[in-house]
Length: 483
Figure 1 (cartoon, helix red, strand yellow):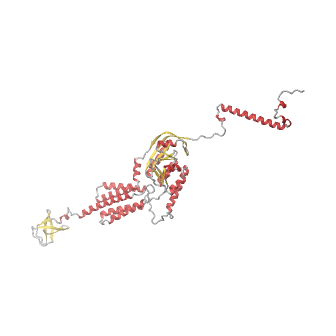
Figure 2: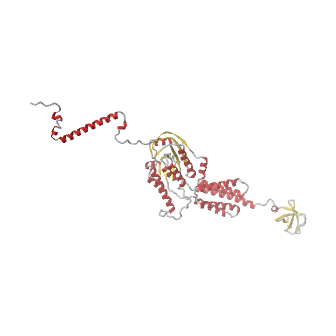
Figure 3: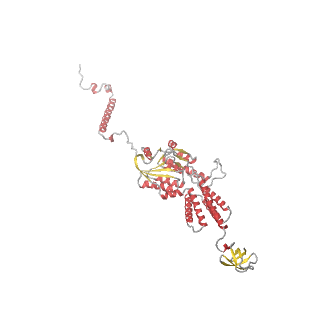
């Protein structure tokens, strides 16, 4: 019996591969596969050893994902503004944006409370916000504040919108200033003024482009312009109009921490240093006089000053105050883009008031002046929906009452002075007693008030030494009658 040779049975192959001895090609293929498996296992073991050595570059399973950019906020500039958006407001907010950029602040927070304002001033602010290299946040505060009309556009243009509890935003329908409401127009809205429609379409397109850039609720923004829709802070948060609701600046910083800010990255803010910039005295003064009601009061004050100065020349103070007030009133109306015809009608009313002092018209000129001023005030600003840019009827009524009272008092003084007896000059001799120095037949000489006058008797002959009464004065000759 022949013994088996040493080594593996079946000619060095395992029992499982022994039948493949009759098929050499298949055997080679199977051997290659088993070798590849062994090489792959060896490579994996080597990779595990490299990872264990602490080199992470060789341990990634695929391309490394970029980590999110972090924007750290350490310094904040706060710019509180409350009032109508006018050129003075635009100057203040634009200066705040420039300050935030030039002095390397990390964030500008505009604390806004506005009923709206002028389109030109609003667009100046928005252009500054969009061009700012420092992120701008609009915080509608304090509680009870609003961002209406122009304030909606400014808020939508900012990178972060925050609202305090109890605030609202919306009602951004544009109104053309200086136009009278249409008379007899269609109430159902079928017939529209082409100019108003163009302005509305332009405003809709403008807010649409802004909200698309800042990735906010475009549909609501257009609705706020077209239908004057206004919503509360809670509704704005649900609709994606505002980012957060914050009770204060500290709460705002807490809630924006970790949020993604478009173009800047993930916000990281912890107890930043806050600096507040406020309006200068000049800006406050300009903001105060660019209110239509203040402008109307200034015009009336100027007219009253001129009335008094013209009535009694030489007082100086009323004339100076009146002239300054008129200039400030004109500046205010020009800044507010008031209708020129309205201003002219107001001035015409003032001219009628002045004429009432000089001409006795029994109140006709005063009535004409009142009507002219009322029509002019109505033509200045047609509707109050653009941030209250209209003259309040209460202010208008009070102003007219004061003007009419001033004119009435001055007219009464003038009439009283005209009716008062003359007390100086030759005209004052009428009614005075005198003494006939010569016999008046009918002419002669009389002594009146210590002076000798040529006289003529109107009551027949008067003997010398008789008492006479001056009847009238004609030039330098007086007519007398027996006392």
